[in-house]
Image (tube, rainbow, N blue to C red; front, side, top):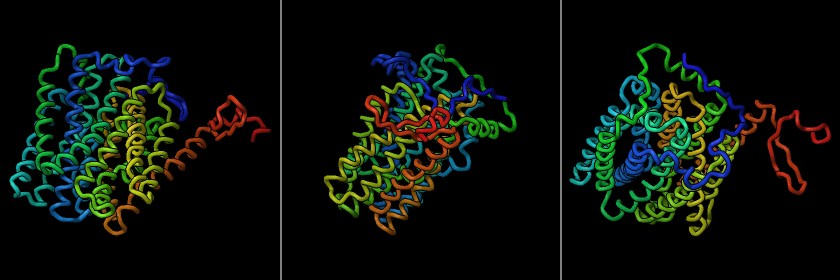
Length: 448
């Protein structure tokens, strides 16, 4: 049985990321390791190109059908396999050499992306082609994702693992923002096929980098033998730790409703402002600018707090709802920048907190649940939000996409406070925090 990490953090206990004020060198400490530096450079390209393909695929489906709901079906096929098979992918990843397994997975990414690009560029692509390739890509992803998470532990020493996890989260989520922006530009200038072709090249680059890593410097995580109950073990472990459980619950609402922004933005470009693919590229570029700011700010994090993560989820949802209600185009555009910043900081903090709360021997399986919720939620949210946009308009869809996570964040904050015997306290004295969360035992009768 896997043992728990040495410390069970209470709901509001901070996990230190840096001691004291972090220097610029501390913010990028893990990049001093050459294997990690090479790997992350390839992953930045791979994540960016992967999102380029996803957005290009969505736009290709919109061109083929003119139906936003059909775009949502594509999202479901891309992410749907994670709903049923995600934890099994982590069990498979635990049984093989992570570097070699990743090389196989990225080779499959390259072949499938090249096939879809060729179909699009030759003009013979049909909707069923897109659906079939999207489904197979989703099946490959369920093994690649947990293998990549655990592989981090093999490249860096324990003292720099926290920094490596935080930077990995930054690269993953930043690629998720910059990719759509670049894809929008390429689609507008050359078409969807070329944006998809970029991912085939990026996947081959990732294979080449993995093949040339210094294997003698890797810290190999022992492979787990075949055994029953490994998924149940990880599930019990995740439920026992508040710093894992609550971020996963919050992620359910964010992924289903809040992460369908690219689908909804196609509607804004096509119907609300009638700006076409050029406008879609502009919208995603503005979100990416905010994401870049969020990525830079995240490297300066001094602590990870559960309450801060819930707060950023609330902010992210509120900004999306406000963007949906924005009466002027000039107001809508800067809100997209703010959405990108809040979303990326929330995502990086939540991802890092969950990973750092896990024992290394069980991290891959626990993170498979996390990724399952994230991409499975998008698989559900894609058709759901696409359908809402189709029936009631993109504006209402964006309001719903923000309001539901914001409301969920408020409810979760109240539940966390109650479970930890905490309450909100307001102080009006000079030099004191105006709002803070404190234990009920610390509040005097006069303050109650």
